[in-house]
Amino acid sequence: MKPMLEALDLRYSYPGTREEALRSLTLTIPQGKKTAICGHNGSGKSTFFLHAIGIHRPASGQLKLKGAPLSYRRDDLLRLRRQIGLVFQDPEQQLILNTPYEDVSYGLRNAGLPEDEIAVRTERMLLSMGLKPLADTPLHQLSLGQKKRVALAGVLVLEPELLLLDEPTAYLDRLSERQLLEELDLAQEQGITVAMATHDMNLAYAWADWVLVMDQGACCMAGPPHEVFADEEKLRQLGLEPPMLLELWQALPAAVRRSHAPPRSIEAMKAFLQSGYGTADAL
Ligand SMILES: Nc1ncnc2c1ncn2[C@@H]1O[C@H](COP(=O)(O)OP(=O)(O)OP(=O)(O)O)[C@@H](O)[C@H]1O
Image 1 (cartoon, rainbow, N blue to C red):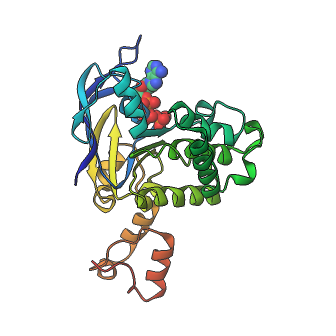
Image 2 (spheres, rainbow, N blue to C red; image 1 turned 45 degrees about the horizontal axis):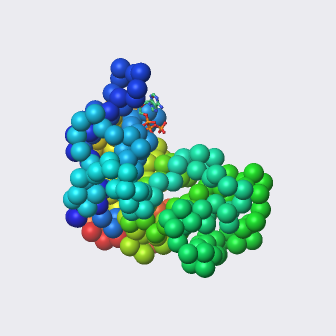
């Protein structure tokens, strides 16, 4: 696996605090994959993201993007923020203008693109995110799910190589969550590396190709979802619930589970159960 972003032994404390928010954090986000960064409140996920885009600088340790150490020179930081897009947990922190159209075009204008190209790319992005009918609606009239989509559109339109999302599904209903995950899958298919921070183990298990678990500012587990989530004891020690689908799977007799990979969606589980235990992905 080729690394997209690496954190090597990062240490960081917020000004005026004695506790370390990152304690020797070492992790890799692999290129081209969908990575879930799991961990309970305060484990350091957002702090890591703010390091990734150079808003915070580690007291010690290093970040590398595609093998090259991050540089904190002004022009390098501007380039970095074109390569890495961060979608904040709270869209209010991200949306600064009055309408989806204005907000999505803002970053392109900031990047100095010509007005005709800004118009074409903004229109295309609003259309692909289903936001065209809301293009000129004042942002304060949008629902939270719609605002989250605008925030994502404003980042995707800049065509980042790495997309970081902080709790993207928090407060979304099932339909909005599904739409958002489809948009992320599409972004990944187009070659964007996607990483999301989440406390939702069910989501991480169903969605991710690669899972990192953070605790107290360090990364304590890393691997494909079926491996990480199979270590129930460690997850419970960390105060995390194993995914429900995997728990259901473990409750089936071993003879039934033998030679089948655990299903990663409710549909796959249903199909497996209804087929007389034959259609889950064979190992
Ligand atoms: N602005 C800040 N000033 C001081 N301490 C902070 C600040 N932001 C975060 N922290 C502390 O840093 C640690 C890591 O917080 P962080 O927000 O990175 O965790 P998180 O895993 O993203 O949590 P959540 O899941 O709640 O978003 C916590 O102990 C938190 O209290």
